[in-house]
Image (tube, rainbow over all chains, first blue to last red; front, side, top):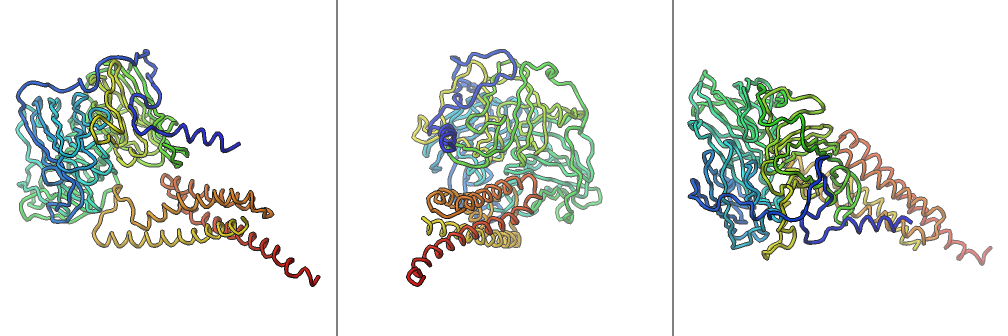
Length: 470
Length: 146
């Protein structure tokens, strides 16, 4: 009596070893017009410009190896061009960028995803969704125009929970076309084997800055959890979040800023005029901003947090989110059940367990809102590929500050955010938790445009390497 | 079958003691890691003792509890299925408490208390099985004297 329905549920939860993400779960059109799901352009055709001389050309060689951090500690992990983090890729807004990924010896295969850069779908670097993983000895060329200035990063989206953690990532900075480069430090924060590093080093480092001079710290959280950052010895401003400038950022004192896993924040620090340093602390590592030799003692984390919902000043949005064409729900919970035949306490999306999750279907040109709520008991940094969304409200409280554009939004347990975005980048896009361990546990859904078809499969691909994007 | 029931029940009770040992060890290993300058953040997967606690808590003990419940239907022990049911229920409560405690840490306070309950019911189930065994054996030996 118990065994038969239980067996049925168990059987139904199993996932074939190879599957197309478009066959996953059920179609959700968000209350909008019905969308035909047959025929159209394959993802693989939605590439960046095939012709034209690139302004920036980079080759990145991925290796599985033991290596030394810049501060000397030995790590067993992954490198790009022999180090981790990989090189900082620098481009100017509007540049055509060409990056060749070479897989020297990563047995599981690799890809590169340009986190936060709204690239054409085929350049998005998600194994089994936008390309096949690059097998050992293989290569893949990414070509795209960088549309927006800001701080971004790149990382493998093949077996990503393990490869990113092991160091297969780097940073990507796009300068505005009309501005002189700032006095800055690109500061990915990553924990290797329990060693927290800032820009690849453990401990404190310095950005030599004259008293009274401004410095820009481009913080990138490459870990799986929220990053609490605070500044001692100076007030600061949050200039940009997730590669989008904050409008009229005000001075902050005595508050920490929280950067979600995968998210970025650009801080402006003014070196104190008394000749001492300001200290940008990320916990166990810090940047000292000041003249050579200047110091600043560690301070505890302040209790206050910068609330980006009310930070900066409002300005016009490029679209009107008041009358969206589609309204989606992305309710994250946790429940007992079977996932791929395995009993456990699993993340759920709208009450369903992976792979029976919604496929959010939209049309190009739609204005879309999404309500993301979380009752799962854990924090989830939700990352929508290929788009930036603006935060409209949290728990019913409307945003009153600068438009808060995100590609990665921290949704704490108990919170509900409403975000809006314009459907302007056709393709099939992942919309998942960037605590990459949670993604392996099924906190992954997709956003699909009408008229786009999926030629790739998760599991056995066309290459002799299996695609495992999570 | 009775012997199997008894062994399974005592194995569950012993596993609960092991669980306390793993988690105690894990706590001190964690402090040792911190003393070595390591950072504990979301990328921390726990140490090997945490791993053992997880393996026993979500793998070995639930499996033993399910086996005990199945065996209880064939073991012919008065109240055997009832006590196996208590054990199973205590295991379910223990796992639910553990996972809910990630969101509501205060529930972590009840997780070890329920562990004592689980150990108690498992040990009782085992002892009852042993008593049935000796009760069955005693009349056979003493029968001629009666």
